Length: 268
Image (tube, rainbow, N blue to C red):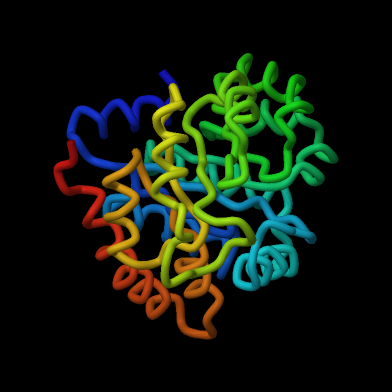
């Protein structure tokens, strides 16, 4: 069983929800990224999304764009990226997802990227701008390599398109909490609960929610409706601060612990 599937099976049995942090791999440094992943796991993270940098991350807000640019400036290429994965995997079995965009993975080669991801110990791939209608080749490759192929759905996703996505998606379904780009928000859209409930009812896969989540009460709302939560920009913003790494790590702990706590409550 893929580590992602195992994680959700474990969480379901414990009546907990998944906490999934997103980090821009290589920011503030490669060794620091490894330490951040291991620290987040200690705090209770269940799965980690590692951002593979791209120069034009159009779905991301200012924070994640800045982090992608910083990673590229620091020389994060495939060798550096998979070097981090290898170091994490030497110390942890936490599920790891390659989170990126179509262009850099297409340039690398779907087959070559998936083979290397599997060999280094990754568990899934999420390409933000990969249309499900064009994903046949990558779907077959991921199936062969036992890598989850994760897709996004949005408030604008129609029931017909949701059905198409569910025919190809594995691992879990990532629901974007709002239209627009990533970034911290104070509240959900007015129709958030209604649309999320419909997605959850239709999905044969676990459903997690991301984009804009940065407060414990938002995490608790998501946990009451679905299977887990993704927190990205709020964490990434702290990795970009001009501070010594021990201070960044302390800030990450202070932010993450209250966000993780609701996911470890007992949920029906």
